[in-house]
Image 1 (spheres, one colour):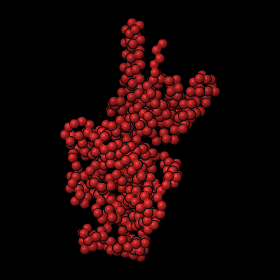
Image 2 (image 1 turned 90 degrees about the vertical axis):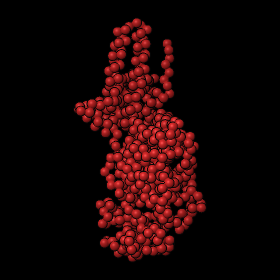
Image 3 (image 1 turned 135 degrees about the horizontal axis):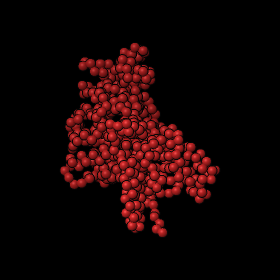
Image 4 (image 1 turned 90 degrees about the horizontal axis):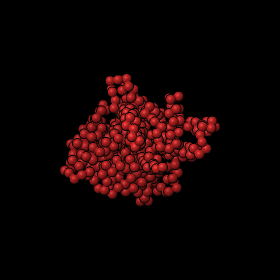
Length: 533
């Protein structure tokens, strides 16, 4: 008798599929009509899969934690052999340890994984059955086997008849399986960008050293805070340790180096322009710090380098705290001010572990980082990384951040602009294949160094980058904005959302503690230097 060994990737795939069937109603709903017992290769996975589908057919949901109750009932009824009972117990126990991490799984990805695996298994089974029929000389049996396979192949087809009730039901279920909105950025920045969806591809344009990597970092932090899996891929700009230093400094709210310690450190904070100009109808400002110049523009009228003035002025964001007035420009208009934030110690190992433990307990999101030497990895290698990460660890990024495509190695030797276009095509494909959001940054052209606010014309190398993205934003920073501690976002391109692209959002930052997004508001900070006129 010939012993057929299962491939390691099949073992892992079946484990992922069983887990997704236990926790996800969507996976059960989509796969149960096409399922055949033979698609799974072990008695354990066959048994549990059948429990899941039986439970779904009766209760119209996935068993989730009830899977343990099902197991106990089966054992007590004597329907499971002692040998299989132990295997099932061990298997379910190992899954229980991972239960919490599977609550926000990418449903559509596992549906696709199931379809692909069932297709693969149906071909394997077909080959085995046809071989046996041929060896026995039974042509009729072979034809019958092939006919039955054709029915299975039809069930596994992913095409849709749009103008049919079935097509409508399939569409509706697909939307339920993969809710389009993944996460939103906080504050005015979130209003500018809008809800970030699955299968979106976001590009961010910025000149050199404007803070593009910190910009990607703020997206990673926001996504992890909302319970998502985030992958940050560095392609040569930073090392793993440098990425870790920034992220850990952010979470600790402390610098990593003693040279940055300062007991009188001033950090940017949100204030109201009406409070600064003394024109607020709700309160009387004791110190006027902003007025208008001869051109009608807002301008700081005090020395904002004077620590005593910074401490004397009392900021006010009471209207901003009321969500009904937060974006009512008649009640609140954002501006920048500074408060003392003493930096008296660097973060240390034990302190950091405690902070991260609290974060994980509250938010459940994950950030996985990977760094490759410059020009050593291609866009297609990043796709392979995602596949291997899923196969080996069950990690599928909901948000994939790549810093940055410009220094990826080319897929093939061709004209440079075609190489760039191919990189962006592949990255767009990743967002569609894995039902995630891909966010990248790219370098602006040489003219951007003398540009106050980036425009579509500031692309570098190949304008077809725009064609592959769903959103494109500019990151801007003048020398004065850099001194004050802020950057500016503007919208360059939107594929579907009806968001006004004329708005700009200022984001307050404190990079001494690697904090890329302390607060944000629509508009710009007041001027404070004559050369800005």
